[in-house]
Image (cartoon, rainbow, N blue to C red; front, side, top):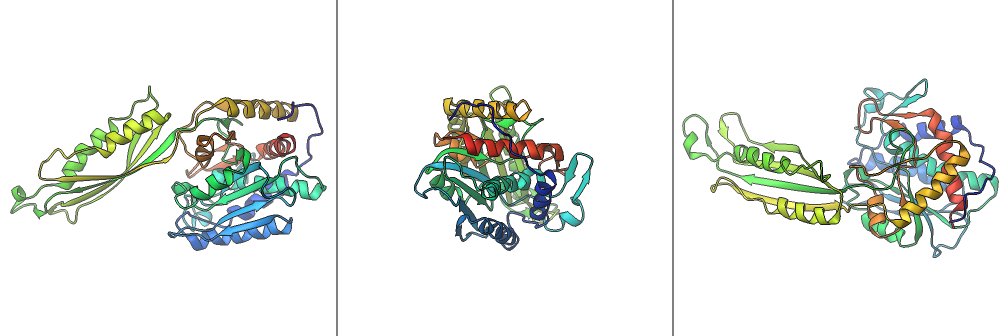
Length: 384
């Protein structure tokens, strides 16, 4: 990295940035709808092709969309450079745009499905690359942008491609949204996902209740045990987020299934809590409990390389006119977890500022678009 000396700050157009974000937002793309996601991938591919990017599109699998990787028109493809990560999927269903998440601008707030998490940031990655093409300039390092189709469900089909691309990177810049007033992210908890299947014995709830063994009753005890693993002091949270069970109100339930979320700050805690969850046994000897799953995103800690990258970005932000701070640790996972765990300096949360990820009031702040895009441009032109 170079010293952060004073230089010309790029002149960028907030209205143009917002118009591009709107195009991407209005192409709805829920994670599990591969056809919808690929409609957006088609649009993004066309945009990237227009500026001369070299493209690789990997067909999706397991019901997910395609992975799109773009290489800057300059630089050798085998040369280590900068990897920008963004995702194109959202948690919002088709139809949210017309109902619960209508696109609109109210003062500094701009609303839309997935606009904060993270179509604004994903578009800004493209916009920064376009800026260099338009101005006829190149960056010291080649730039790659990878657009992921299923980050919201843990990137199960794209993780291998992300890690392969990261091997060619000196730095990784993740365009997830900024936090809590322009803050970027330098550490994330690891994420675990588990499924528990409890089998009991069905019986008539009135005539032969004593013959049954309730899977839901067993699940209730398991839920208390799982939720009891939460330890805020240690940074551990467990959440039973989905429950499915029973076949009728007058039937002792023979089956109940739970889906469990785990967040932990360190690899050591991830190993111990994972072992505990996988080792859970039934309280009722006539019920069986099966647990599958594990960590799907490793913890991402702020090491020396990340700290140095953050300080470089902080200096650039000061040139632009804002004080960049970082969130010491966040519970949300991202694709940056994968690259940081590989030891590659990774700076996350570089997208638009706003609030309400996944919520009914999901929004970005219009005033953050230009300074955050300027910061990305300056990172691309100063990292070496």
